[in-house]
Length: 384
Ligand SMILES: *Cc1c(COP(=O)(O)O)cnc(C)c1O
Image (cartoon, rainbow, N blue to C red; front, side, top):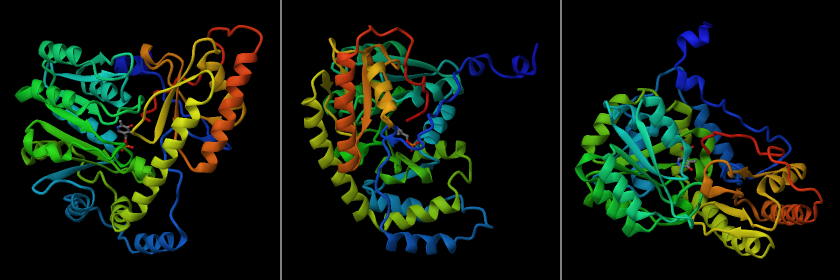
């Protein structure tokens, strides 16, 4: 027996290694990043702020000032606090660990954000994925039946959902929160809230088992790694015991506090991206051979239609054109032939539209039939 076989958990050994495609030189439209950077005067002010940070000191682990700024500037209702994570990925891990009692289960619609299942597995919780309807709306009867059967400790609802893009019906979500009742928490994951302009934050006061999780990643600060989750003080207190005490580093803390003084800039960038999303939805729908799904996020899910070649060919053709989108076809049966495209600047979006139009045309005209297994996109399990 090798060292690896002896010491590493079999389920960890069985995991596929993270595959991050090298995006150097590519038009990068695969990870829902905000394409806009800061104007030069703000960069300089931020640089000064970071230069003043005491990097020789540990962070103060209560993060009181940062939490207060988040609550005030990002719409957390009065009377509610937040717990902070090194990205919302870490919050998902923290909740999984805190709730990992023997036999506890995690439930979420699928296809959904891969970290829900991944974190559940690593914490030893069983993951129950309930398929969405083929149009990617919630299958409410199936969700309610699964909740009655499994009594999940944690239920995730991404609002809007990734990788499908649209908001779920709010009434259906309320029915789910009510059905879960006192035997579980429901985490509404609002990673794309700046682009959706809809939120469950105002409902925190009505639902004891509701937690609302967000991140600054998709609003333009993916690199600093900061997520936050609002909910009842009693629940947050328990999650805080699991949180590594210094999980937010001093530079992230200072950068976040600086940016929270400039939310007008982030709001303006989100507004630009929402306007571009409208343009892209229309322009993509006009491309022959493409089905376009509605989006309330900063990405758009499309399906390469039957009759055209498959999405793997289109994806590979885009790669040849130095355009990187996300090939999600293998994530779930419902996503067959689907690609997920990040909405970017007007210039980059136009490059994508031109490239995709050409790639679809090339696919339509290509002579030999696709060879299964060839040109498949990277088998990614990256959280984005
Ligand atoms: C991107 C994403 C996150 C992860 O956010 P980080 O804060 O960058 O870890 C969480 N949930 C969903 C649905 C996402 O798409």
